[in-house]
Length: 258
Image (cartoon, rainbow, N blue to C red; front, side):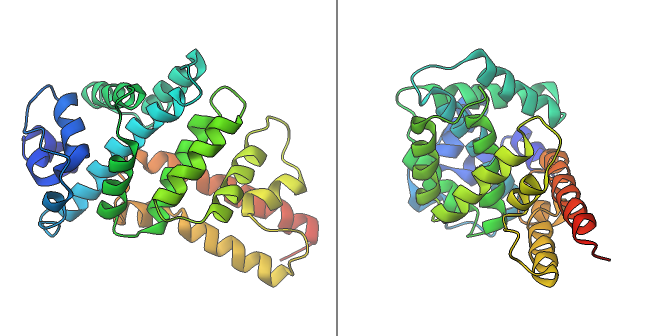
């Protein structure tokens, strides 16, 4: 049974609990218990439907925090709204899922949105799966760049989110550079390719290949879904994988590697 079917069955709100369960409850207009912001309740039964819990936590955290990022500079621009809608369409979400995602996005924009509690629950529900957290941050970076610029307020918000998720700030900087290199609009250059792979040109061919394989493994769609990425987001992971392959193939050709 998928996590979405579980929600529609009215049981996941009880199983998830905490602020994420509450937000899903609001998004479903009271179809299940809204729960409390009580972290003692959502971890104790984690063995029950664990994969569904992680997927639901990722989905609800992703879109609510995306709403927070959109509002963090004081206003929500049309481009940020379009980006959120584009991601929902890109994921080929069914109409009912899009409605829930939009409501989660709107909750994240509210002044009383409790970012700390949401991030803490997501961190615990993801059980330290760094691949999953990395994908989460990559999509928040995409949201922050929706208007074409990453301003200081958005950068500081991303740093804060990263620290709350116990993730490396150095790796966040690398993810930002990777995104900028892959999305500046012109033809991919060798410098862009190195940035996408998160390495520099001083690496030997063997080291470059090792870094490429490591990055590819981190973004493998099947592995990410196994770790709790909602299946609806597999297409986004697949496109990230294609970016990595294209960057490596460019450098491989330039270096004359076999």
